[in-house]
Each structure stands twice: as C-alpha cells, then as structure tokens.
Image (cartoon, rainbow, N blue to C red):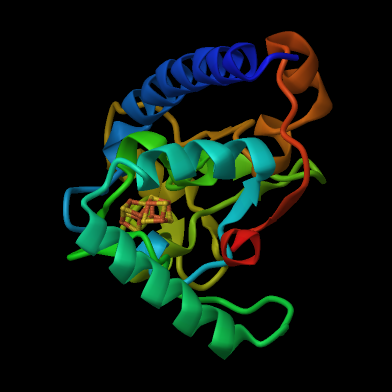
Length: 195
Ligand code: SF4
Ligand code: SF4
C-alpha cells in the first residue's frame, strides 16, 4: 500500500476514534475528572504503541522545535538506560513536558482512550487506576471492593449509569479494525522500545 494511502487511512481511523471516544467521555461525564494539567496517566506506564502509531507520533515529533526534540532524545536515552531490558518497566513518557503532552494531536491510541472504564479481553470491566487517586470514577467506586458501587451511583441522582466500553487497546487495534479501516498496525511494543 502506498505510504500516503496508509497515512490517510490511519488518519480516517483517528478521526472516527476521536468522535467515538468523545461520545463515550460525554456520556460518562459525571465520572470524568480529567483536566488540563492532570497527567498522572502519562507519568507511570509502558504505553503500548504499534508501528503505525509510532510512525504518526514521529510526524508530530519532527514538527517540534529542535530544542524540545533534543530534550526528548535525552529523556529517551535516560529511560532506555534505566530500563536496561527489564520487562514491565514503567516510566514517565518522554513526550510529557510541564504536565502536558508535546505531541497531543499525534498521540497514541492508548493516550486517547485512557480514563474511561473499558472491557478487557475476558469481558470484565477495567477501572482506570486514577479512580483510586480520587479522579475518574472515584465518585462511584467502592475503594474496598474495587468495583463500582450501585449505592454510590444511586446517591448521585439521575445521571447516566457508569459503563465500561469496548475501548481496550487490544480491541481498538484488533484485526477487525485493520480490516474495516484498511490499516496495518504492525508490531506492538512499549513506546520506549521503538527507539
Ligand atoms: S485519565 Fe485520570 S490521570 Fe489521566 S488525565 Fe484523566 S483524570 Fe488525570
Ligand atoms: S504521548 Fe502524550 S498523551 Fe501519550 S503518554 Fe506520552 S505524554 Fe501522555
């Protein structure tokens, strides 16, 4: 497939996904406490990226001022040294500056979907970790049982039910998506391993 067709198919999927996610976040707004400056989800993770996502991230990287690019390269070097082949190594994303993403429009799929309750591969609901840091869904989660409490939900009054959506990374980058949008995600690995 020609490179420009690959990119336009990927961008078509990104705009579809953005619209879908916007609807989900809107529907779940009574439980969403994301705001500018909150970046806990970019501070401690592995950030799975496919080849297609990484290529698009690099388009954003190349548009950054040279001094920022150099700072990112230095952070990447430091993280790679600290990781030193360790599986499951978590780190602050090298694209994060002053609690903001420097490549926001080019960010990965996990970066777009994180914060919602999702359905995992086994069909169970997955609550974002920040619920336990008084952020998303913290107003309906029971901190002891670590599940959504129907009592807490009822106390909130007449608001949309807390729901989990098909927004797991594996679902959003599945073969079905590849087939329907004529895209190839390629290999998937932690962001830092692409460098
Ligand atoms: S998903 Fe959670 S940690 Fe990330 S910006 Fe939203 S509230 Fe903050
Ligand atoms: S690419 Fe941006 S949104 Fe994604 S983890 Fe890094 S800083 Fe956060």
